[in-house]
Length: 409
Ligand SMILES: Cc1ncc(COP(=O)(O)O)c(C=O)c1O
Picture: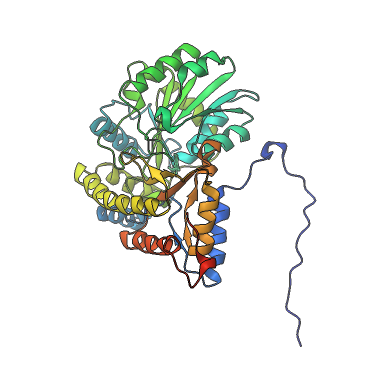
């Protein structure tokens, strides 16, 4: 019999950089591989994990992309600072929805998603040993970008008791001499908390007094919120503040990779010194179509939120089934809830995945303050969410014929 052609595994002899340090592959990068393997083995896994909108962009956005892609002159390198029509569209969008005036020539730098902006800002401003205030719980990329850039993470704890807002007095009393950057993210992922009206002015004042670059990562601005807020609307903010926005979530364009960095020209020029050495501009049809998406009217966001509101209600029921507690006022693309008693989120998510074929995100991946929590993404249809509810409810019901399959959440 002929032997199968097997390629021997390579034993790497080249050492990795010190810079990579303890940085691990991104959680969802490994977890989605595991889910693909489970599916390949015949498991019908419902993925309620990642915040990648399942709904399509507006039809006119897709039409603009395809129309532009047909033109012969659409395929070359594009300006490092984005096309003027995209920067103008971002400027009009900021004026219309956030009430903030930004010069399209100097105060807006289009990005390939806000995630790359987090890395660019870290690389552009951090020296080895500089400290960075990172929310716990919070988006894991703030931590990894800081570490990759040689900075030192100083995580600041957020809790339900303080509405997931940092205690600025505690931070100040601990000393901030070495702190160079503070990451904030309101509406906050994963907790769905919003910043009250007086909070951004307080933060700007805090950053000015302590010489800290304050960056608001704002991809969830429109989702399930009544008020759309920008940190840059605070008078004097531009001296110390930057803001990242994205078309990934509210325009259903996560795979397109379009975002923007907004702020003072001097800061953006610094970021450009790094960024222009990393990429060579965004595909022109993507930029043209993104400009169309930025021109969508309020009805687009209203309709989107009607869908998310219905899904949120089902996600709340799933959390009830799991015995978790949550704030019904939370906003954004997820539902965040606390497990009962001392139950830990990892255990709950493992049981949901391995016993019920439902993938939920354990809150601990967002930091130690999230360990008792679970996150459900609203990026699945209502029918899928209801199916997940059915599957998870089975374990809560008593079934004497199969005691081994029974557990309380
Ligand atoms: C808080 C936060 N910031 C940034 C991002 C990245 O968004 P983008 O697709 O614009 O890179 C995400 C994505 O999930 C996020 O949750």
